[in-house]
Figure 1 (cartoon, rainbow, N blue to C red):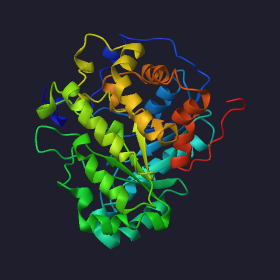
Figure 2 (figure 1 turned 90 degrees about the vertical axis):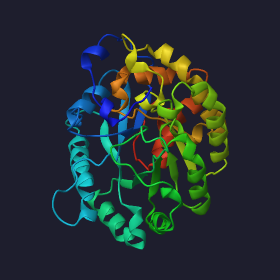
Figure 3 (figure 1 turned 90 degrees about the horizontal axis):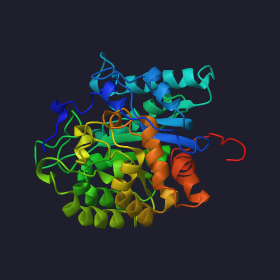
Amino acid sequence: MTVSISDNLFDVDHAWLARRSEPVIEPERPIIDPHHHFWAEPSRYLFEELLADTRSGHNIRATVFIQCRSMYRADGPPEFACLGETEFVNGIAAMSASGSYGQVRICAGIIGHVDLLLGERAGGMLEAQVKAGNGRFRGIRNSSVWHEDPSIRGTPHIPPKGLLLDDTFRQGFACLAPLGLSFDGWMWWTQLGEFADLADAFPQTQLVLDHFGGVLGVGAHSGKLTEDFPHWQAAIRDLAKRPNVAVKLGGLAMRTAGFGLREREAPMSSDELAQMWRPYFESCLDAFGPQRCMFESNFPVDKVCVRYDTLWNAFKRLAAACNEAEKSALFFDTAAQVYRLDIAKPSGA
């Protein structure tokens, strides 16, 4: 199966999603959703849409926005354009912080973007991002998703091959730790060795691996999930040896993961999803431990294939055998610690 941006990776069919609904599991469990986006096109997902999803039955206490090249400034020097995204998101965060929209604190943390290929000049841009975030800016993400098969695309913007190994990029990366900022990495699993090398070079910087490390089942990897699994697993186990790396457990509903979820007549149930994804979850949990793992929605990208309430049900089914401390880490504590969020749990949680 070949899937690319032109195949409407981000277009949500609400009528199709409505063909599956189910009761919410453990509705009282507090959750921080550490990975979502906002954009107006191609399928609108802004404050109102996320608010509706977080109100679908689960106890979402806070969220973290992750950069997606949204609402960049149209005017001024190109390298400053990314500040527009942080300004936009911080405005939404301020709306949520008013309490007028309920208990959830939308965008309590903001992960923005600075082009680290600016080298040492990235330091000034990072400082500007911190200022624009008004106390909410926590770090940046630079996508490095690259594959030799040009039909495999995870974002509209294609980064250069070997970005994480580039000397100039690393000059920019060195500016993160002095400012107490973290780095989110989005890549395919075939590139995890580069991420490990980056973690070794900067042991004082918190790195976060997105989307189970970029599981891939399209293009040159179409139909090869079973064949690729032990290689993905070995790369995950090796990466986990770096204590400054945490991993986000989500993104497997993306069409590029190759599970064919959108090609079904109706969305899969949370039980079916949990059974399908369990080998990936157990591998990451065993390698990283719950204190370095956190569930993520990756909405609205994963919304193409699954509803918000169903997705978090699937995560709760995956974690059913964990003890309470492990569940607390997976759903709340790891995200709060990694992104330095001052979000109180409800009493008794």
